[in-house]
Image 1 (cartoon, rainbow, N blue to C red):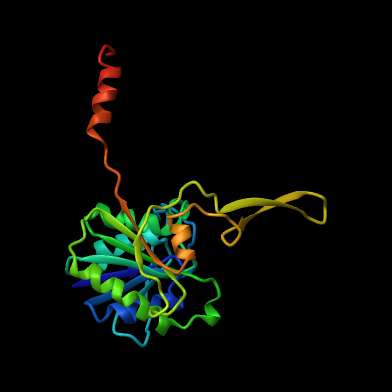
Image 2 (spheres, rainbow, N blue to C red; image 1 turned 90 degrees about the horizontal axis):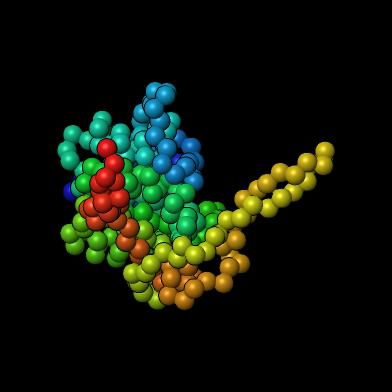
Length: 255
């Protein structure tokens, strides 16, 4: 099995290293990640400047490259340039901080996922519900995620599917289980907060309200907070034939 890993946290993220070590038990791993953090990049493709692939040496059995581009660039390069064999699956992560609700649509990872699915390659994003990388024990995280990967690999994933996986930061023994859940798009996790600079002008920062929101029961926010691994399936959007038929009727008398 040929596996590509990318992320939005950058090539030196400890989560990427942990994921590469884990996935090396399941197949041949290639890593292509942005050289710096590219969180909230959404669907950015680099078209007006050249991209450079820099080989990076790590102490795990995977060819690893840094790219001066976006997560979507990384996937496109993985398909077009580096892989002599067809990719079977693309993973992103392990991303630091949860990827829940509306996060999906601003994340650089959804762009990487869509790029993979355009090439008919399934995509798995995995994120961890904690923000302090200094305190993370990745051996615990790898044990927790291993069981999820094992099930995913054993089952045939549709080629136009992304699985958005969020892990609670807990041990395998204390995890409450795995739940397939919808993403709660009703919650606006980030809001602008206005502040005054020394000259009396207002400027705005995005504030993360993740810990403060009351969440809807049974959603990704809710179950992740309660200690479950959450998995949300996301499909690549295709043009719907019924919408084409509807538009055709609208304009049938117009030339």
